[in-house]
Image 1 (cartoon, one colour):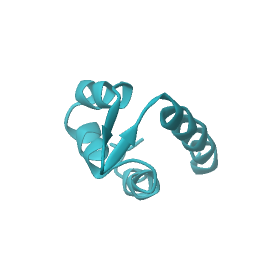
Image 2 (cartoon, rainbow, N blue to C red):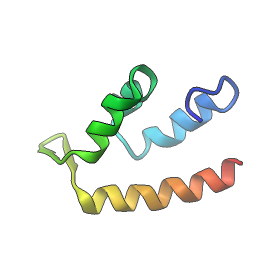
Image 3 (tube, helix red, strand yellow):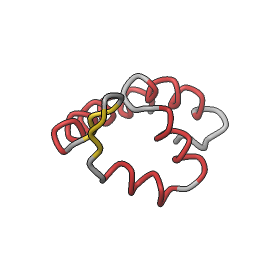
Length: 69
């Protein structure tokens, strides 16, 4: 959805509330890199990304996707 010319900007704005910009940039450039970042565990002062956060994001994005379609 993020690469769609019509929905892409809406998706990017909605997603930017939940994931860091680097994830969104990686989504545009390389799906594989984005998936690796998404599935990885990152813990630093700027970002805590683990299984709990990943699961919460999946739930929220799923609900948002239903509303956009």
